[in-house]
Length: 463
Image (cartoon, rainbow, N blue to C red; front, side, top):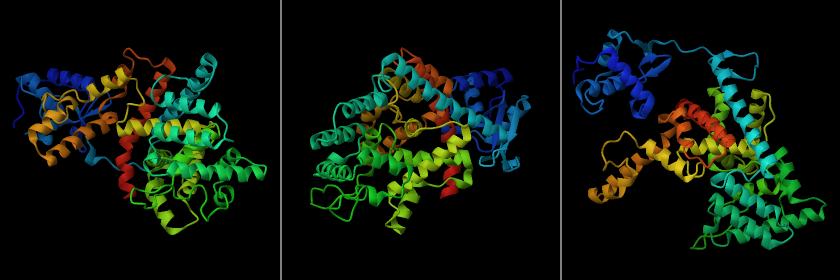
């Protein structure tokens, strides 16, 4: 399809304003050519796709457009065009801090500011919560903070010298963190007894479970000595808990135990979960350089196969302590496990497109509506409200699966399609969130946006 002659420079400028307002779809990003306006890159093909209906009253569509023709027309109209294929590969440079490697010194400074702002804002939220509300957990009555406050309250108001209290704590954590342990038969009962036995043995040695967890976090080499109750050859972390319906033995409970340890120690133990395992190597790669970013998920599996001594929790704590040190060296500021857990959890959830535990209901609905904006077809599978009727009309499981996948892609693409200004506007509407927490969410979102753009490069290095 030919590019209409009626597309003028003024129309292109209006198209750019439209894109700034509604963002550019992820699928329309260009790897070869960029139109540069005020330092911001745009896909020439999508710019023409938006400009064309302004000139012809057609619907926005890139169908039939040629990227070379689009960039040529924009070049003739006087716009700056950047040819990515002709750019020399950036040379690796090193800053004065020899531990921080990147392709560009300005990128390092910008990234350092993002990390510094994030941890400064976390500290500010904690300070305000502590002085104004009496404790560091009653921040907002929804999602992550609310769930954390409920669990913290139970730990503060129960003692661990009662086996029923241990069981209550485990069931509460399992339910609020969705560790799925209660779906196994007898799993939490088995784990409760294991913790009870180890706790009593440590008490006989004039120690405590809290101290054992803290010591293990600082030096993850004493797993067998610290957590073996003497009843079998397996310690707290390596024991398999529960059975299936068919009586088959189930696996370990590392995630649930780490969360129990997190609250038992007053947040002085790192939380092990899939989000932390996903985000941790990516953050490390951003700081240290792409060549040092490894997939922790793969590393855990490989080490687990190679050595019985190198358990997943030992590998995890070693890796998170390494990341903790990297960040502290990077921003010259002490970082706690609690701060690191917030960072990994919030950024990981945002990258996944899971905002329900991050935002109050109204802001969540605003965000989802914005994510699906720009889709004119009411029956399109991208539209959450129409997905059921869409499935019924298609009457095909294959098409229904495609519908679900396309819809999931919209959620997972939120941090790459909705810019930080739009996100800020969304979460500020009739917000139940405190001003300090709003600022923190914006900082987390900015880092999630950076990490989401960085992730494809990381994956290509780790395959």
